[in-house]
Figure 1 (cartoon, rainbow, N blue to C red):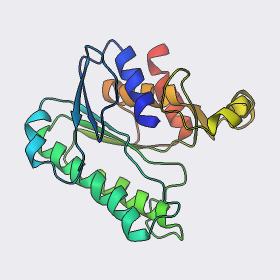
Figure 2 (figure 1 turned 180 degrees about the vertical axis):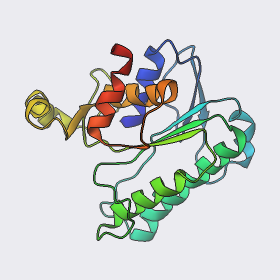
Figure 3 (figure 1 turned 90 degrees about the vertical axis):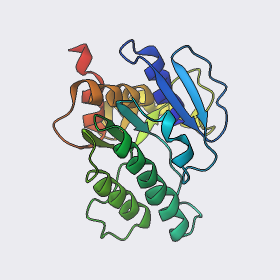
Figure 4 (figure 1 turned 135 degrees about the vertical axis):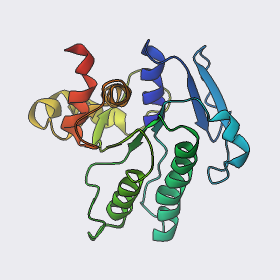
Length: 211
C-alpha cells in the first residue's frame, strides 16, 4: 500500500523525470515515466546492477509485519534485506538520497524490549553510515490511504471515517499517505534539517513546496 501511494505521488510530480519500480511481481501500472524491474529475490542483486545506475533517489517502501514472525526471520527481511539493497545502491550512485520507510515507535537505541522497534532502529542507524548524499528515515503512524489505489488494506474502509477527527485532535499521530510520498520527494529536492522524520516532520516537509 505504501509503495503504491508513493509511486502515485512520483508519477504526479513534474519534477520526477523517470522512475524505476523494483518489484517482486508485476504491478500492472503503465506510465511513460515508469520502468518496472521484476526481482523475486531482493538478496541477489549482482545481475541487475546495470539497471540501477543513474538514479539520484531511492524511496524504499518494502517491509514486513513482525506479527507471527520469528525474530530471526523479521531481522532477515527487515535489516538484512534493506541493507543489502542500500549497500548496492550506495556503491553505484554517490549522489543518491535514500529514503527509508520505518515506523512510529522505532527504537534508535537498539536496546528496548520490542524486537521490531530494535530491528528498525538498527536498520535506520546503519543506513545513516552508508556513503549516500543523504539518508532520511521516515516514521509514519496511521496513514490515510489515497482514494482510487488498488493496494489499500481492507480494514481501512472501517477506520478511514475517523481520520478527519484524528487530524484535528491527534495531529502528531496521523498523516495522509499522499503526504508521505510528497515528503520523500521533497527530501530529495529540498533536504531536511534532521535525518529522522516523525509524523509532524513528514507533514511539514510534504508542504514545503506550498509555501
